[in-house]
Image 1: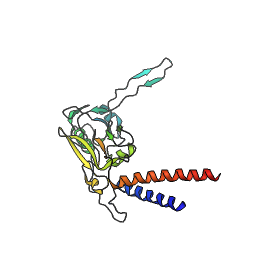
Image 2 (image 1 turned 90 degrees about the vertical axis):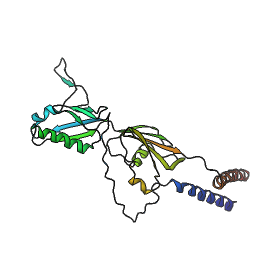
Image 3 (image 1 turned 135 degrees about the vertical axis):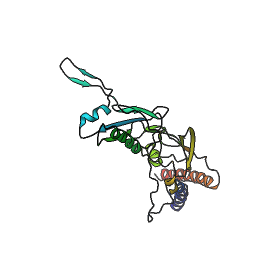
Image 4 (image 1 turned 180 degrees about the vertical axis):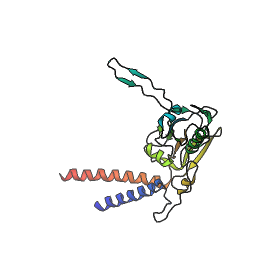
Length: 259
């Protein structure tokens, strides 16, 4: 009886191990090899983005006109000054890809990276003789993406950075489900007035060179569910399950009769 149980358990482990081989991320990568990073990602600004732009310099008074605040200040009866929370220095990119920036007026930022946009604003300030050596910083306020399908948690996620990879997004969503089709993870992206679909096989290191490896604003990630497999493997697993159940029942009866 013990030998029978051992053989059945060993068969179940072997079949289960074979089934899980398809569930390895980047399975073709070797730990003994170095992989050159060729994709230097920079997220481009799109319409409807919200940007936090701050200008600073050695003399704060000179930078003040370029930094606006929509917060309100109130003074209580006890003299306490309270400032309401607000998104200071936040600008929304309109449908034409422009923002209205203090002093400088309308600026076209759509299609630029954050670094290029900061350089543009800095140069405009210098050219206008407003500040000799301004420092301009820009960050996304509303960078988010949506994950759907065979993952742990469907939903829209907000990113702390504009440099988010497909692997990070999947991990944030609770990893792929066991029935996810790892060969066809879709990234749906709006660009140039069209929706582009990229299919990624996250078992292979080729994804590092994909335009969709780094996510863009408003990307939708869809993990397609894999259809239940039919055939010898599924049938074998079913028979093993039945056999193990039978062995468990027989063992229980034997132990019961010994008492």
